Length: 106
Image (cartoon, rainbow, N blue to C red; front, side, top):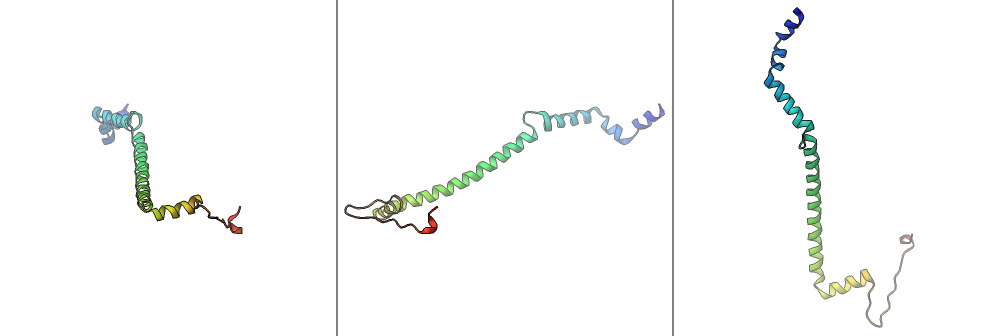
């Protein structure tokens, strides 16, 4: 029994044996690991927020490029050039020849 009384007198045992310290440690353990709003859940949500903010920036840049393209297409000459290049449209009585190079054919 002498050994147990010596352990009870140590500074660490008195500090961790305090009921308030035990309660605080249990509370922190519960909040950190077991609660519905635990640390891991918050970390996952923070990662999701960061990914969404990155995609938000990407889409803002894409919107800016699309607006520039739309403004460019308001000019009828630009629209005609785009239609001819992209969709191979032609005027009446006009022939279009598509030349493919050997390295571009699969």
